[in-house]
Amino acid sequence: MPKLRFSEFTEDWIKYHLKEIAEKVNNKNNDNKIETVFSNSAVQGIVLQSDYFDRSIANKENLDGYYIVEPFDFVYNPRLSAMAEVGAMSVNNTNLTGLVSPLYTVFRIKESSINILFLEYLFKSKVWHNYMRSIA
Picture 1 (cartoon, rainbow, N blue to C red):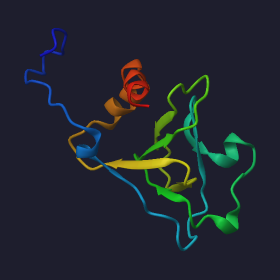
Picture 2 (picture 1 turned 90 degrees about the horizontal axis):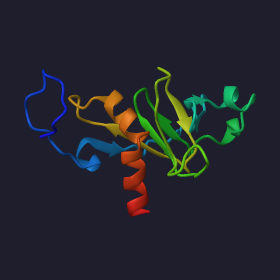
Picture 3 (picture 1 turned 60 degrees about the horizontal axis):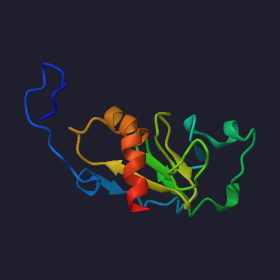
Picture 4 (picture 1 turned 120 degrees about the horizontal axis):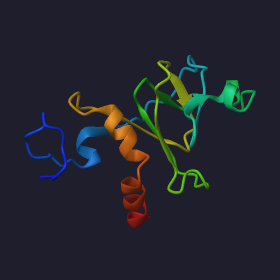
């Protein structure tokens, strides 16, 4: 049990593997109905691609292979950068359903008792970065 904790929490921590509380999203835009395309910025998180690049990079006629991202889904961009040492992990806080490139990994938390905000902070922390470096 941690020494420092909020007074309202008295129980032991429960440790979960991500695969126990989340599921990979493999839903693709097969019917090309969704045209909103996201980018995953290491600094800004999930943003509209047209806003991020001042134009749409994706080909509107070829979005059928893109993954569907719903609100509160997480998106992992494995591209490393100075601002994303282990890749960018962001939650879709846009309240929009959109698409991301199949180069990204999308997953959804399936347990309603899991705090999305806690995970959002965890995935941006040194704890997560150190873990990712240890397995990469």
